Structures are given as C-alpha cells and as structure tokens.
Length: 309
Image (cartoon, rainbow, N blue to C red; front, side):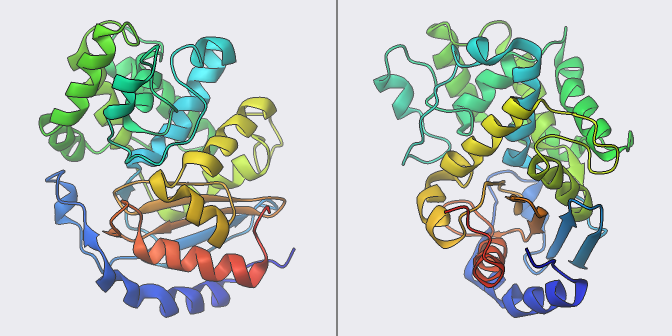
C-alpha cells in the first residue's frame, strides 16, 4: 500500500480546511465552545514507525468520545468479553449518541452498544478503582504504555465543565441504575467519565494509538502485545459499526475504515496493514463529526484505496 508523505498530507489538509465554515463548534460543553473553528491538524503514523503530520501539530485537544474505544479495551482486559457484554449490547443504532429512548425499549434495558453515551457510561462503571481518579487512571495507564509518555493527563478545566453540564448523562446513569445496569455512585461515575473524555493529547499521539490498533494491538516499535489481538479486533469492529455516531453507515460507504470521532473535533482512523490516521478540526456537522476530518478521510481513502470493503 502506498505510504502517505508529509507533502501529500499538507496538500490534502490545504484542500479541505475551507470546509470548517460548513460546521459549528460544540457549544453545549462550555469549555469546548472556546475552540477556534479554523484550527486543524492531521497525522499519519505508519506501522513501520514513521509519522508524518500537517497543520497545528502541537495543539492539544481532548479525546471526548474517542476515549470510548480505549475504555472498552481496558474493560475487556480487566473483565473479559462475557462480563462486558452482559452490561452492553453489540448492535449499531441509527439513534443519536445521547439517546435515552433505546434504554426504554430494550429488555433488559442495557445500552445497545459501547459507543453511545449510555454504553460508554456502563463501560466506565466497570473500570477497576476505588474512586474516579483510579478509574480514569486505568485508561491513562494504557495510554502511557501505548505512547511511552507518562505525561499524558486529562484537562481539568474541560473535565469540570463537562461534569457541571452533564445533565443528560446524569439522566442516563439514573435510568441505568434503576434497571441494574450500573452500580455505585452516579456522581463518582460521572466524574470518572468526564475526566476520561477530557484526556488530552496532540495529533501525532492520537495517530500512534490508531497505528497500534492497525498493528492488531502490538507496539509499533517493540512488537509487544499491548492490547490482546482479539480485544483489539472487537474495538475495531465497534469503530466500523458505531464509531461515527449515527453517520457510521454513510462513513462506511464513503471512507470504509474503522474510525472513532469525538465532539472536540478529533477522529481516529485505522488503516489495515498501513497505519493510523488522526484528524482534528473542531467545526462539527449535525451528527457531531468534524467536517474537515470527514472530508479529509473521504478524499484520502479514495486516493489511497483504504476501504476495507
């Protein structure tokens, strides 16, 4: 498969940056509303260890829903497949990521998959730890190992802003607690979840995480199996079926790679046998996906023939 060069990536980014005018920065989380829509960055981390990047590559952004993939990996490693999927389902949905209606319709009323907010909250509830710091610490520990960088942490301002405005997620938690899907303190869980979503890094770091998934969970440089092969494949499968919110179907047709987006404007994509791509652009479409990121991935997938289909 043809390698992505830095010059090519810069060319693609220059071509798509104008699409930022077609979206809107997320404003329901006050701290995210401060982001400038014209900021953009992209990186491709090849599985041979070579990384190319373009745009504002040193800019630090929060993972938001991209963190759901990492939380799922940790939960699977801590508890195993059977325990995890006794709490969350395996099916995609056409509903928005914040939906509560499916919880009312399903019997038992567990979330339909781990990529919607309800499912992600149920997964975070399974993380080992006596408090929220220890729970989010399990995800950070995995990230530190993947990146070889123990300085990665969560953005305290964003975490606080999300926690104080998490009214809908509180509703999801209380509904699930009433039905026995989650246990313990709702406030402790929300504190852990908002800190998880506020984990912060730059574009090259996110691309490296994506590359490890492209490498079937193995470290790019040492070949150490950081995430067991089977669990890495489960995570990638959910990225295909549910990773782009309720635009996952159209994304599969137009781009065709496992990917996960977040409302910060981040997208992490996995290119089989090649590497990981990360894109950041905080201007979002109506589904909650980065307009610059989606357009970049559409063009690059078509040019490099990335689609797994």
